[in-house]
Length: 90
Image (tube, rainbow, N blue to C red):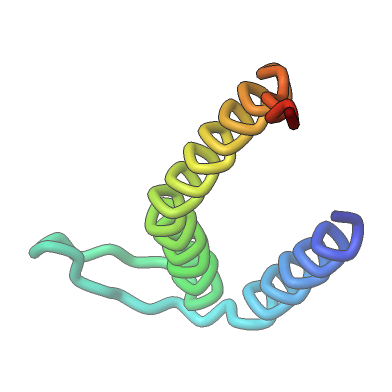
């Protein structure tokens, strides 16, 4: 957990440093509307959109996996609760 937090923080710092170095103004057309801004700003926006899309695309598998784990834990709890039936030898 700490390693992923450190790597994320490092990636954000590098992205901000790159954005601060790219201050050239450009104009892009977004759905027919001209938008003017710095190259670095557009790079940060693209990075943010990519992160959000990645998380959204990952959510269904995470939800499915947690659902499966929850069902398995219920089954384990039920099996542990049931008394074992041993056959009596005659």
